[in-house]
Image (cartoon, rainbow, N blue to C red; front, side, top):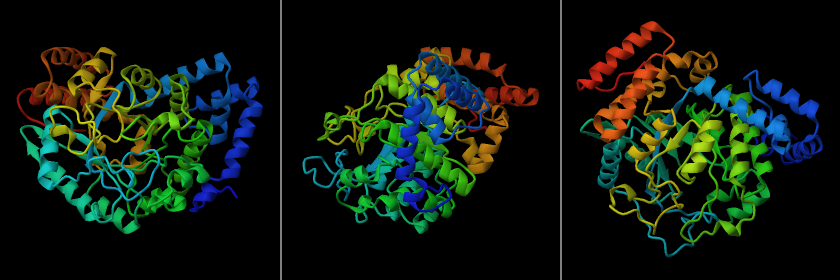
Length: 471
């Protein structure tokens, strides 16, 4: 039985409810009166239910689709302005005991080079990332209790935070590791992580069990209930995601929104982020083996609908996607992107991009400076800000600020100050010139006069060598 407040996976992600939702959506996809009503509700910026959003997803009406895109763009501007937060993944270890059919790290893959970073190697990777200009990382590791125990992950986090190279500093470490215990989530919280990220891969239980035939990840309920244990362990910023292409996208879309509704219903705060990865080619994985791939056009529509259904969530897109696709979905709702990513263990210290141990093929292979330059050309502010997390504005405190529209007085000036740091320390001449012009223009968009004056003063101090100001 469907119950968003239940702590049992099969009740808050209920198979029958999803099937009913998809049937309802199919029956109403041409019901213009209902479609218009749902769009009007979405305009209130309070979000949509999984059922309402699924009806919009099923609609093929051109006028409705255009309204969805226009609204998604407007909601993105209202809550996130023109800021795009930058981050990079850092792969610590590709040892893994699971048998996931879509990931080259699976246990049976005998020809992938297995590697685990020592603390000295973590340090070198972090310096390489700092020298590009990164301030925010998402650490990744396979599930292996012997090679990658929680103590190893904690040690790596401590190492990452401890390294101050030139003007570089990693100020926020998000963690993407396997589902674990409340006790271990408490340890991650004590290590001062940012967001705990865990992709569901697929919400379809039967498919999930087939795709994860062996290893601890086979347990659908334990995996799906992980966010509740993370919240119980004190982590109030959690990130959801599905791997589009494994199962029928309409099913995944409904499940993803049900998961967001569940977190809101039980914990009073929805997901801090939602990621939208698509299945990509990798070492011994051929995406063509999975017949549920989605077109770029449908992918854009899904991103737009997530933005209007969960208006407050941060949306993340990785370098799995091409420059062209990333440009499209940034407009429709994505608020965080990775730049200059290496998806192999130890990849940042290698001159040439290694392909023998990548988790997936990287489509956007530009340097961080090139990505920053491109965003500025498009009229966005590349932001390296980590202030909210460091000021304790997490969970419901962050959401309240966002919903009240107050975030403009924090995030906007913070993004300009962190961009200024990047320009001073890491940018090419061309990027620096464009960035300085953007900062001057965007200063005028800070609503509060006092905040604007402090921001101008801090920008001058950054010019003269000071670092790390924040509102």
